[in-house]
Length: 345
Image 1 (cartoon, helix red, strand yellow):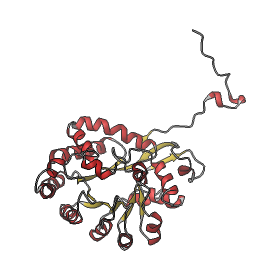
Image 2: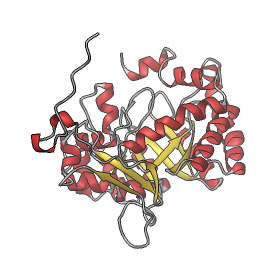
Image 3: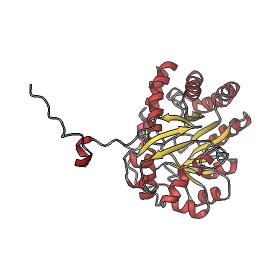
Image 4: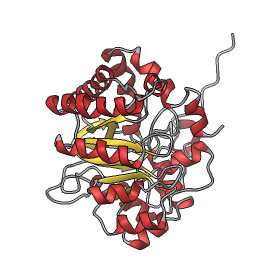
C-alpha cells in the first residue's frame, strides 16, 4: 500500500501520534534512552532528535522537554528540532478550514511557546503533496525564522514539489530526503549553502526503486550528508554504518564521499561544522572506534557492528568493547584447555 494511502487511512504518522499522546514524559524518556544507546553502539555520537508525533501544543512541548532532558543526562550530542508541521492532525483534516486553523496553531501558539522555553534549535516542515503545500511550508518556516529558529525542510521525498528550491531560497541549513528532487532543485541547492541530507534507508524500507540522485548532487557541487532517518514508520534502524553501505551500493557514492557525508557534511547539516565532524585541533573529541584495518571496511561488512566504542566530548557514550575471541575458536597453542563438555543430567 502506498505511503500516502496508509496516511489517508489513519496509519503512519497518525498511528504514532495516537501512541505518543497517551504517554507521559517519563515513559517517553524511558523509551528513548535505550534507543540512543543503541545508536551510540553503532558509532553515532551526534543525533538530531525531532518532535512531530504530538501535533498538539501540549504534546509537542512534552516531546521537546523529553529531548532536552535526554540531552542533559546523556553524553551524546543531541540537537532538538521542532517538527510540529509533520502532518495535519486527523481532527483538523476532518473539518472545513481545519488545515488553515492548524497552520495558525503552529505559527501563533506552538512556535512562540517553543522559542520562549528554548526547546529547539531548528524547525522543520514536511513539504509534500498531501501533507503541507509549498506556500504553507513557506509561511511556517518564515514564522520559525522570526522566532530565531534555524530552518530545515522535508523536501521532495516522494514527489517533486519544489521543496528543494524553497529550502535554498530561505537559506535552510538542510533539505532532507530529496529522493524525487528535480534538476531545478539540484541547481538551486548547488547555488545555496543548504546541505542535502540523504536517507537511503527510508527508500529501502518503503520498497521504492528510486533513491535520491546523489551523484548528480555531488557533481553539481552540493554538500551531501547522510543520516539514518530512524523513525517508527519508514526507517526503523539504528545502524548508521548500514546507511554507509546503502550510500555506496544504492546512491553510488564512493567510500570517501560516503565518509565525508557521514562526518563533516553531517555536522554542517546541523550547523556544527566548526565543532564536530573532524579529528583536528580545536574540534570536540567526538570519536568512534571501529574494528577495521581500512575505513572502506565500514560500509563493506554491511549490517555488522564493527564499532567497539564511542565518545562525545571525550566522554564514553558507548563503553569500549575489546575484541574477545571465544576460546573454542582460538589457535590450539593459545587455548587453556579443550572446550568443556556439558555435564550429563
